[in-house]
Length: 83
Image 1: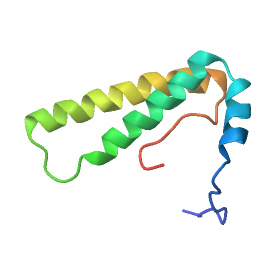
Image 2: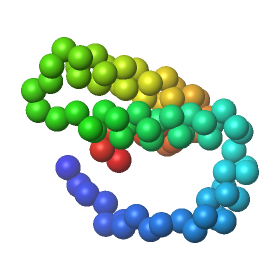
Image 3: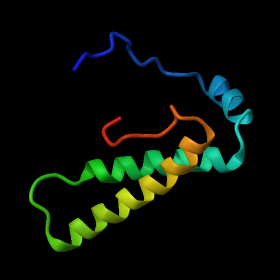
Image 4: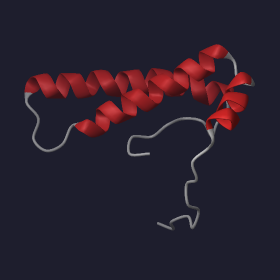
């Protein structure tokens, strides 16, 4: 696998607000939901008990729902766990 030489650079709040103002509200909400769900999925490590497996599956389902909205808006928007 080839890694990208790009380094993530923080976006100033005003620039993020300007970008956000150009997107529909449901896409912004889906982005927020996807990032939260991806963070939740990444929280689970190692052998999981039944309750943790259910919580992880719930987070994966939420991520899939949010990514469906994001992909419909633009194919490069979906969030992957670990991003």
